[in-house]
Length: 151
Image 1: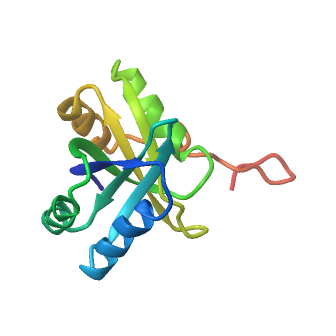
Image 2 (image 1 turned 30 degrees about the vertical axis):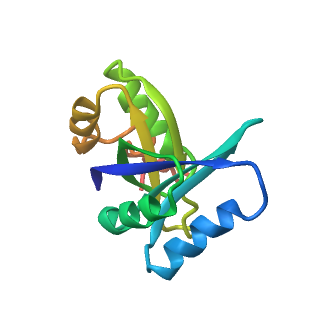
């Protein structure tokens, strides 16, 4: 699954309780966050999140009166295995698409995970990643038995 989604970037002043207030409000209004990242700088933190219900998340964040921006990003479902992120990056790189930033959720072992990608051309990236051609790690591997014959 590859789809464009809205990401909210919430600019938090660096003082105790601000992140907790935002998270509490989202929880109180039953907004499920599918992916998030938090970065800090000297003056403020940037809390980026993707919510399952964009409209409800937007309403909650606007009521908090905290500086917030919205950005179009790609939500990409990936297998939770080594090389999954490399596969996505390779596909985008092969088409000369620039990744501005990315973050992923932690998936269950053997399960799926979600990657969020901010790219320079979302329409082209959507087409590239929707293509079902196997990635670098998804190519067929033939195992050899002790006699040297393929299984």
